[in-house]
Length: 315
Image (cartoon, rainbow, N blue to C red; front, side, top):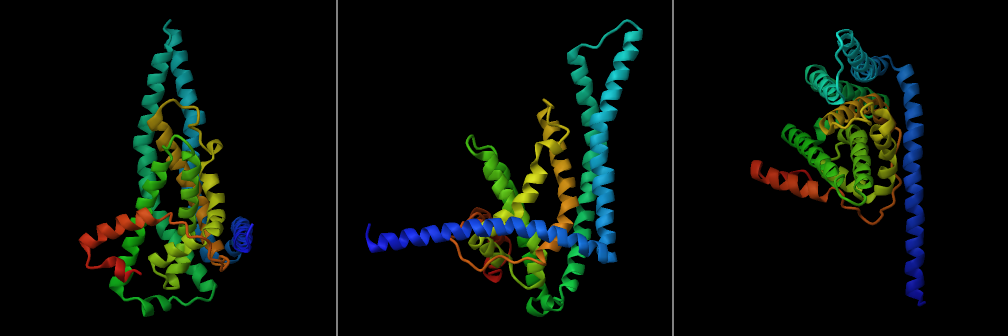
């Protein structure tokens, strides 16, 4: 082996080792950061109030109602129906029971689960923003930096562009899940990066860092952000969290998992926001992982048709 080859091999091994350490540091930071966030919640009455409201809305009202319906209400209704018909000498066939179960489930989904989901989403966004503002103040980072560095038009464009990127990237993460080989793992990795972006977005926004720079930073420091977002990604996608795991109804399974996963996300996300203000990625540039490239190209193309040179103003 030549000197150049040995040098390259050593550099590659060193970079791999640093990548593993950075990945593990991301996991460590999010765990310790969330533990530290609990102390902030305990000490700060404003943050404690919003976290408490989030727990009541997402955990007690929405998530608990889903679990209660699936494990208590639905079995009891089916049992009472079978028992009542049995008094008249009639029995429900397995096909009729399945039809009744689906009817009750879709009724519950349409009249309660989806409306509550649509109501909770904007409310959660408001609470998350208020938690981030309070965390930003507590971290001694003045909110006056934001308007002084950005004009109003650029700020609105940045917000719209960030929303578009996140929507497209969510679609991308859902699409890779359908790959026959490694789809679930790739989707999990995508969601890990997305959750890291969500978590640090408030902090970076208040620091005046544009969307393009945020995405580039994650792509360059990808081992750290993969580790940071992996914990929440695993929690929200864990099959044991879903009461719909045994259902044969694909639509019901998908809607139930999505809403319940969103509830779990909403419960954990305030801690992730608070953790991001106490964490920072190591300043090591790895080989760039262009995970947001497709989303960026798609959004740049869309914005170029709607706004004058938005991508250039967002760099």
